[in-house]
Image 1 (cartoon, rainbow, N blue to C red):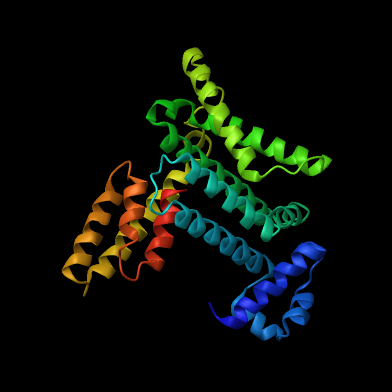
Image 2: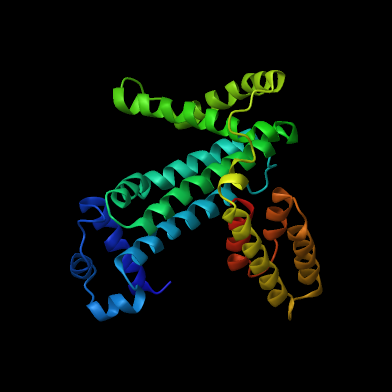
Length: 279
């Protein structure tokens, strides 16, 4: 990314946290980043587009770090999942994501509000997919319910210790406790077949997610085709394997991530694949 553009994003990010999105003017951003209005509009068409870039940057950082944490581990590794959650929360905290979201909902910009809602849904869908990878296909019908129960308990415990400041408990301990409770919860919902939300929730209420996923899949396949041109025989073989795996109905995330790790010039492709697998 252009260093001057990055400078504008960093300055605006700080202002949005300090003053709030709605209260921050473009002139405030110009003054803080020491650029002209013309330079600003070379990079962003509006203040909202600037914020969208900041949020996308945070999302990309989160996905890259989650992939890195799981590198060399099985997708079913509970400690790996715990580490991914810790990384996610640390990235969110460092970037004051909650404050940015509050600023969006205090504004009158519906597009931004929808973007924040989509962020929540994508993160929940990622948790749902990881719950299935951790506990197997047997939990798939209850996976969204289990995700909500797990997240709710972890978030409430974090909130309790933040509000009371009575004890200092490591985030990993809280997550580990939540995961230990999952075994009993899974046994209970399976025996009772008690489903409140159901795995179909996203498909029924947000059919555009499926359309978005197909578009992303096509982008990945096109990118692989480009990379295969001029690649070595070994790299072509790896890219071909990756291409076939992406085409199947249920691609194996752990296998794909392992293959990605040995593909040359994989950075752009990895971004597309991570976004596709964990949507």
